[in-house]
Image (cartoon, rainbow, N blue to C red; front, side, top):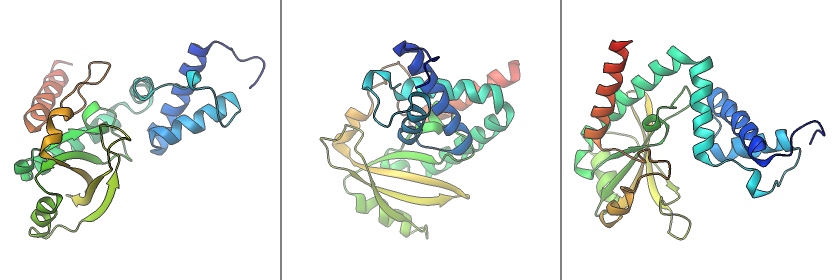
Length: 210
């Protein structure tokens, strides 16, 4: 680390968060990769002390600031397109209790972001068969369970919807209750189709008032 830099942990976390946010907004880096690379750039070490690393919420706030300063109308238009596509696919998958998560929900979605959903069904096969019967080409992978590493990863189906990539995590019905808990900062972690419609209506009202 450059001797002229501050040793204040809070200031260093802020600097790392801002650096990571630029990587996310400009290059589409995921949060973990951006945080690691930003820490190396700011601190000059590969394994910094945990108390120097910003959490995802702090980085997300910096992404918003960066986008507001440098990507304004372009990012806003992209977000609107993604939310419209997300609502369409959620309506199509309504029987599987779809919830929207990720950057399209929190408002930071940009050029490199995809639509991320959580679906709830008695069996993952139900969702796969539903999509295949509608001639939707799917790819199967796994994602970490939203409840943490102590739970097995969940099957994820990925497909294109009107040229937008969708990644839908497939959960059991009894996972639905835990999925509704809010984030530590009070923001929504996920919304159903009705919640997304309300969010989009609010955004449109704000645009008309400007």
